[in-house]
Amino acid sequence: MSRLFGLCVLFCLSGLTAMAATTVMLNGKPVVVPVIEANGKAFVDIAALMKLLGGSAAFDADAHKLMISTTGSTPATTATSSGTPELAGDNGVPGKIYTLRKSDPLYFCLLGAEYTTSQLIIGESLYVPAAEEKLLVLHFTVQNPQKAEMLARSDSLRFTAVDAMNVNHESIENWGDAQSHKPVDLMLKPAQKIEAYTAIIVPAKGIVPKLMVQSNRDDDGPVLRYDLHGKVTALAAPIADPADQTGATALTEVPAKMNTAYPYQKFDITVEKFTYTTDKLDADAPEEGGRFLVVTLLIKNKAPTPSLLRNDQITPTLTSTDGEDLKYTSSLLFATTARSIDQDLKVGQEMRARIYFTVPKGTAGKTFTLKEGNSRAYLFEVKE
Image: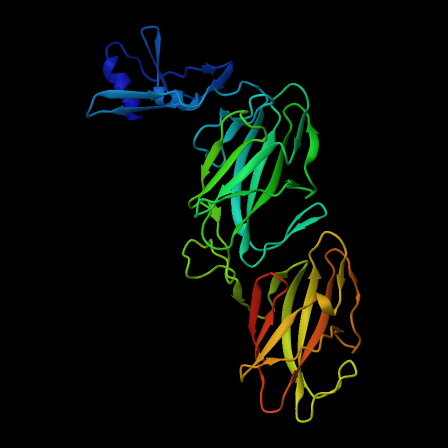
């Protein structure tokens, strides 16, 4: 029993009966609220009732003060809705349904959020963060509470992330369907609900403490604000900077492990092994007294369309034990034959490939680095 309900009991002590199974109807819908019947009257827990109405109530026993707030609004009354939606106010709670937009209302619920540096696919669009970026991926539902069909697509709502430096970042102009991963652009039938996702490109460093969700039209209803502290799934090792205990900072240079796939623009690349050879490769022979370091890679196309795989898609570097950047031969060979790869990989297709470096006499490879364009770098310790 809440302290507020206890106050009701003190005021109405005489003639009270035991707790009765009274049905409370709110806007024509049954709701669960504690009720006590006495002398033909019903005494309701006002704190629970105000919560359903989008407000709040609290009792200060020391000051003998009952405080009631009507912030928010009465819930929507569409019988086919999920839960009890509230109008958006200052603070949003993940998992709770809110009514957004005045002119063309829809129900919105934020299911969760996560940080990632992996590729995000919506339809035939591929989103890849640069080294100084990460993605804040948002999972949510939207539902049509109206009696007529309603259009749902990426411009139905506006998502804005506010980073730790108080800089605003707008979401990508795309929503993905959680089941099909196709772009959301459809007419929702009355009461129809879909689960979707979108992303906001944010700085690689630090948390994103605030998210704002609102109508895509100015002055069309209130702004829903979420405090994201502790509510976003953190990055995983080794992408996450161990110096940031929140798990929100993505390293720009990642200490990578062999036999582990890492996002690399359109591909996932796994470094499988390092081997030295003095044999000819692709008609090349090592310098006198030198050798080749061969790196075997497993490359998978993560793009939603076929992707060209050839030597200029891979830009690795090799640093020797002397600290010298060794020469990359710019050859991308098949796994078992010394022939160059120059072909499209189908969606999801994997291919094993080899690249090699010239290693002079008296030295060896120390650090192998994969980096493409403005993407983050993956650093591997060379081990035979």
